[in-house]
Image (tube, rainbow over all chains, first blue to last red; front, side):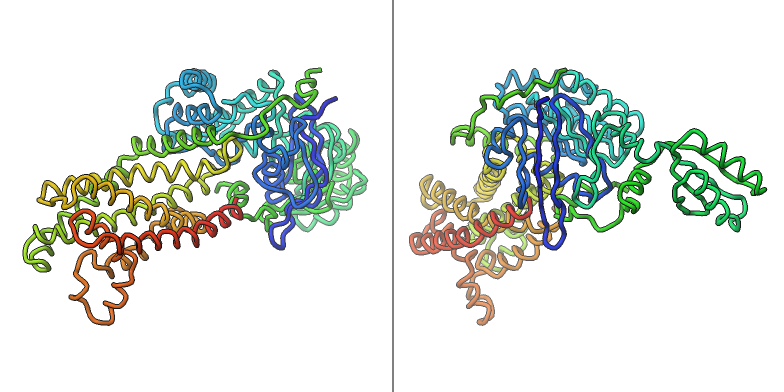
Length: 330
Length: 269
């Protein structure tokens, strides 16, 4: 197995906040690797270090076998970067944006133009090719941004929250594109706040919290750790909450959580749901809602860290540009 | 397994030559200039505002200050060119801040291009815009009766001096562009600093018409010095003294603000 990206003990501080507290990664070539975590977990900072935009205070990393500090120029020849915020030039047309990148990468005028046309067609932007990017929709901008990062046929692609703020259809289109890239042999490092996205795309996931990788594995392995599913019970009468907590806790052999008059508990076997239903019935507790659903990022987090992911917690990526990248659109 | 795409480091260039950096700079300058095509407002900024200033000042204040619009134009046009050039330096910081806040700067820095090319490209493009504005001002001035006292040589000298000073002053703009949180604040800075700076010079009104306490400042104001140098080059009169002083100012501004701006940029990105 060869690794397209390796990181060991990356530490990065911004003033008093520690954005990265020792990140280790090993991303196999030709796979999608998911970096999963809440806002401020250090995902963007990790990407910025790996993409040669930011120096780590300590630790080291290689991309394509090259050190991101000592051989930054070589690393830049291998990578493509797409930020959470479409980093295309809004004052230029789609074609001009791609021409700019192509020319900067040393393509001849004719080659740059041909490559721009090819990519615009591939991302369904041919009709909008000669319109300024500021007139594009969010999904179109994101596609153009992705196209821009592919002009140089990168071996390693960094996608920093590529679907944040996208509608479900655009999101699915983007997922298809990412799968296509991996088929072509590209290694993709994807950061996301959504377990579903990591689940859909990544063959391996690292869960990041407070600047550390707290769990690593395939989506199946991670979900298995949380029991995979969660049972949510909302009693009709909030006075029954304590009893419901006791029943759920006993049936699932786990400690339930209470939020907004709803009890949630990780489910780790097929017998839990019937057992809970039976006991609720025995105790004659009327239930307003009873649902079995997949583990959310929150629950993976709760399980792994003992605390809930708090999207509004002070971010570790609180540099001016980092903050911009990690901000969630309203 | 498709994993074997990167078995060993590929043979890639370790660093860039200067020629490549120059090419990147030219490409990025092209990008800044093409933006104008999609933002006609910028062209208006570059064209209409200076022309409007010349017309307004010549015909509204000309007779009151110099006795006739024609005489006033001879007095004021070199200074108006200076004022316009200083305002134009703000576009560097504005564009840079735009790139920083929108993430374009990160994209550029993640490309295998010369580290200095994004800034150099921007400054080069702004220099071209600058040249356009100056040509326009001289052209409009010529139509209104402005006559070059030292011919083409004086004009070229004025151009060169003005560009040198603008390049130095652009570092202030770069510093502001790096430090502020949004592009509009660069413009606010520009207006609150450049307006008083240019009006408390001898650009629009001769020094001896101002209150005594203000005259002390007007005489040392670098805008006065540069305006005097341009008057000497474009109209006639002493050149060497004010030109040397203007160059000293330019060197001093660059020496102070270039390192500050570069340091601030390194810290921000």
